[in-house]
Length: 242
Ligand SMILES: Nc1ncnc2c1ncn2[C@@H]1O[C@H](COP(=O)(O)OP(=O)(O)OP(=O)(O)O)[C@@H](O)[C@H]1O
Ligand SMILES: [Mg+2]
Image (cartoon, rainbow, N blue to C red; front, side):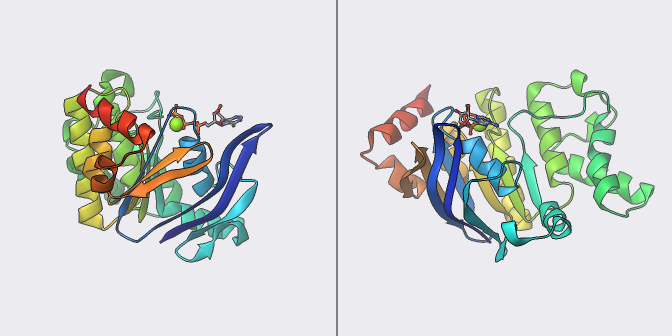
């Protein structure tokens, strides 16, 4: 479904990605762990070409995304949902308008169909009552759910989650993790989840990758991570109890 080959990205002298390779099979969840500033967001942004890598290949559904025309790339992007690290809702729009935005832009749905789709997705994330609220009236956890609803509203086949639980309390974080799992099961989604949150990592992952100094220094199942002798893996695991 998603394959990354020899991806390189530097900013000036700073080498962020130094020949990264990985593959995410269809319908599975890969979690990327790594310290702050190590390049996790850069990696996700390369996948949707918000950042252009210096070198490397990215295949989505077998197509090299660097060989696509702009039109083909835009078509492909519709199949990819991106939950940004900052929820990035439009502050001057209601929840409903925020959710209508991608539908108006990318589909030919009628107003009635749009309204139905919005209600359906709000039910999925458990926030039907928030439809007329402004983002400023929502808690951090609610904003994340609405942002999640917005990234899911076009039924993407691939979801990229960048720190879906940062700034949330442990209970809300667990609920978000549950939603990620639920969506994956329901829609057979292919997920990449970038996170510091070990509860999210261990509960959602089929495979965990640990990014350090431009490359992955660990690749394995949650169970293999739990048994890993790597120092940095142990450090991440110790945060689970914080
Ligand atoms: N557009 C950019 N221009 C220059 N440097 C950048 C740019 N984007 C990211 N960087 C640098 O690349 C490095 C990796 O950044 P990135 O945002 O990927 O970190 P991260 O692993 O997502 O960290 P965090 O966990 O804090 O979100 C950082 O040193 C950052 O300053
Ligand atoms: Mg980041």
